[in-house]
Length: 299
Ligand SMILES: Cc1cc2nc3c(=O)[nH]c(=O)nc-3n(C[C@H](O)[C@H](O)[C@H](O)COP(=O)(O)OP(=O)(O)OC[C@H]3O[C@@H](n4cnc5c(N)ncnc54)[C@H](O)[C@@H]3O)c2cc1C
Image (cartoon, rainbow, N blue to C red; front, top):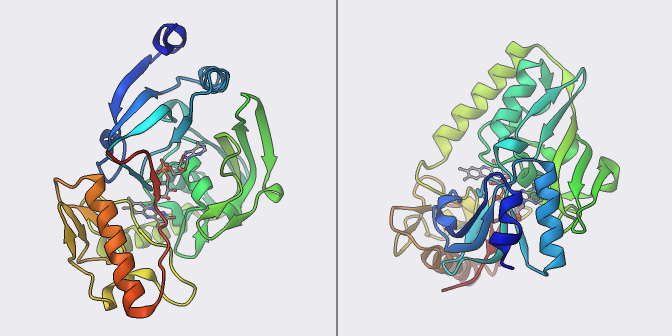
């Protein structure tokens, strides 16, 4: 039996075949996923995870696709998207429980409305909570890892597990949650604060983002910051601003962003990443490491 016949009828939203990943990534590039699934609830997600295990089909978990370069040949196996059914916020007196599909701005606003401080930094980060936990996303001196009380996930055998924050190691744009399963929910420790004050801080952060970040499609910062200086400054000083391959361009506004000017392919972006890396290595002997995750196959 095929996956469509076997698993399809059990899923409310069915299975999409050869779904273009360009429709699901902020760079708007990427070839087809063999099978694209959007589970309607936890039961469906568990069913999908078990099916992939039983049939030895690779499973790729997609949040909002804002830190991903999916190559033009696409992704083999299953891509599972945690979308709206996994987006919710449930504030308590000093914590916030939220689904892994919750956009980071919704999370920040949910906390603000409940008069809870600690997630102001998340406003404007276009990813989902699940992706943010994997990446230990952060901004303006805050990062998600420092707020984690518990994380609920489905391991690759389809079992529900709850891990406490102390069991997880968070580093600079990294976390030990990688490879442990599909994150479905987290509980975050926050403190009480005047909502007005929280909103003011978030407005300031949003304005800063608008002034610093390009508006064309991107995946945010391409390279990790070396310990002593921001990668953007180094790339700018190396003279890479405006460098272009095909439809991909090093942003003139922020040198650590590569933007899709309209017709970029993943191959253009990948080639530009390599070119910037080589330029910086030749000039300064420094090997910049990508922050974005490169997945799938070249065409
Ligand atoms: C304009 C712009 C600005 C940005 N600004 C910032 C910033 O200030 N700070 C920052 O840290 N990042 C920033 N980013 C990058 C990005 O938004 C973050 O890394 C975000 O956390 C990624 O979340 P996502 O849902 O898009 O994850 P995706 O890109 O979909 O996935 C990222 C990784 O997480 C995994 N993953 C996703 N969801 C789950 C899940 N539920 N369970 C298990 N694994 C999962 C994926 O398999 C993948 O390995 C920016 C991006 C853009 C486009």
